[in-house]
Length: 225
Ligand SMILES: [Zn+2]
Image 1 (cartoon, rainbow, N blue to C red):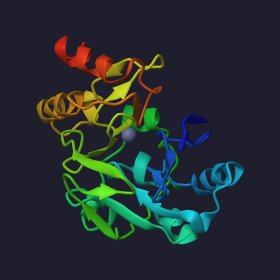
Image 2 (image 1 turned 135 degrees about the horizontal axis):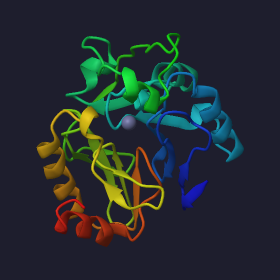
Image 3 (image 1 turned 60 degrees about the vertical axis):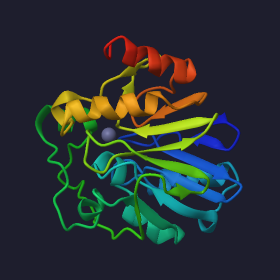
Image 4 (image 1 turned 45 degrees about the vertical axis):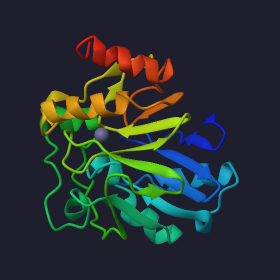
């Protein structure tokens, strides 16, 4: 589904929202879903006229398996560079463990199969605050994980990964408490991005945000309610 010119939400991906973004500088995939989503993703890209070799960048908003799960295969089949914040890179590269996913949260995330194994992959680009990738600014938004990032195009769009989520109506919500490393820090990060100006808020989980930046500012002003 094309949400705004050049910004697609890839349909049918399991685990998390995946976005396909084309700017003047190239085409990127933001997050990859759980393991096993690469065919769905490339199928969607082809449907909207994007061939694998045209995808030059895969950006992970953070290391969690529902976002990084298909990164290794996707990188292999596109030749795209893989970008992640330096603080989450060791987890993607397999040098540190991914967050444990089990019990109820595992069920919630759809990680129920023992065959759903994470394939580590070495990132090509280690991102930090104020970097720019394909015309999108990197905003460090830690809390859910140390290396969580948001991506921002002024006046247009804010991708937040799991810095926050939205409900099915697009209303902002905090990230899940049991699955967020530091909730106070996560709130600070939400406060930080709530000062930005954009029309479209795109989370890792939930519907596209309603009401642009004003809606997130109101969420913060209300004490995150
Ligand atoms: Zn997630």
